[in-house]
Image 1 (cartoon, each protein chain N blue to C red):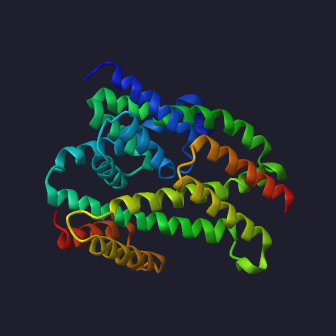
Image 2: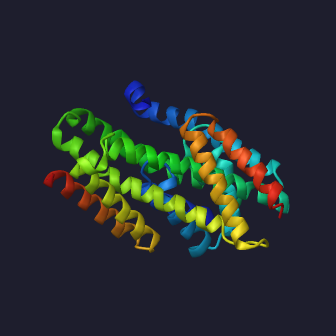
Length: 185
Length: 117
């Protein structure tokens, strides 16, 4: 592996970490654009597989970034991804905590926090929709079968989760099993 | 929490304790699965659709709880405005607006909204 690659990974994830609010989901398309399109480090499929794997890890869901680093450049990439994504927020949080703790009851601070909620919701919803759309685009099967199945599974899974009838990780695995049963390749 | 308990060494301890095990576990899982196998790849594609269900639930929670605070939309102008802004952000992101502009526009609009209403 080119020695410059881990440095590029570190700088890429460093940029991402500054705009990643509320976990990696909100910046998933940006991360994908940088990793898959700009640097061409891996395919879209490999990227999504990594994202799914990272869902099963305990701890913060940005565990995706060390895995991407590992897939691109082995253990040096792992370290670059880990420190790139976690480093800046930790430093900022340390400093911000001191400031926030002092002014947290000020009305304006509360309003600023509330004002960011639509932005976060918009980013999360859009990135989720983009991934869903890309993942359900036609493969070998007829397009309507693929998307129709995905739609049925999504709506059904949503209703089950909202009614708390199934655990989230169990649901992900169940959808995977149904999917591979209907569309094996 | 690490910072509150033990200042900067606490931050490092918190990072190592919370994040490293998961990161190593994910790499181990990656080495275990043969992702080149078409059936395994299809299984992962299905699971990625399943994980988007979680995103949908998360959006519903943010939308229902944090934006509208449980009030019916038609009765609360602020809630309607917040949801409209979230929809505008989502659409702009879908259309490919650069993230820097989006963050700037979203944060500025959200703040203007909160201050105006």
